[in-house]
Image (cartoon, rainbow, N blue to C red; front, side, top):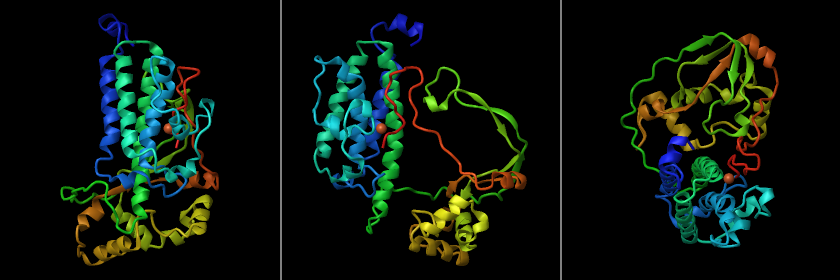
Length: 337
Ligand SMILES: [Fe+2]
């Protein structure tokens, strides 16, 4: 907290943080506004959590790591929720098995929304009367955690809907304004060198974003725009999933073992529709050629040939779980599924 704020608001956390807390918490429930109660409960694979679990778990985080410390003034909403909605915070105690979260019809969605309201009301009251640094830091951590789970809520409900033959839709979207033709993609060459990577400054970051450090970057080329669905369709039609020379070994092993021949959410009908449209220019109900061409999927880059050879079969790695860097005993908040 800045000294300026402390002078003018000595007894409360910064008003901006309180407002942000309300806005981000509301955003989570807003993401669910088109769901029916049954949608909140389904778990289609071990790494997918039901929507209502996400809503409860993010709430448990604030209760567990902030409000619980206010007992007995603060009364725990429901003692059993600690077991149900802890994710992998082993230091906080035992937890219900992740792969079985979809078996829980209770607590109900209504119960969990009441839990959210209960915790939010008491946390806002606490923020308005206590400006302790540790509370501010943990509120910030909880909000970052909440936003991670908002992303998970979307990816998880997408999978839930994808296995339903009724093809439920989370958000109706109008792409009619996105029909501008894409420019030809160009690959830009970038010279390598020693660069710096990692967080710096006082803004929030997780500890796996620090320390800032030097990295050696080889020369590389990268496309100057994202790849469109239409271009990815061309990759499929060109037998991209059957050409080992286009894949590193781990990727090729995955293609073969999983029998992959298209992106996860592209079903046979959709793939055929892409093909039909690409070849004849005809449309399909609700799906224009421009939509297919204009929606970008993912960035695509390619290494310079010499770097590609050096890279060989090396397996890429990703960072581990993050923790709040400025507080030694703070809870880890990399989105615990
Ligand atoms: Fe989490």
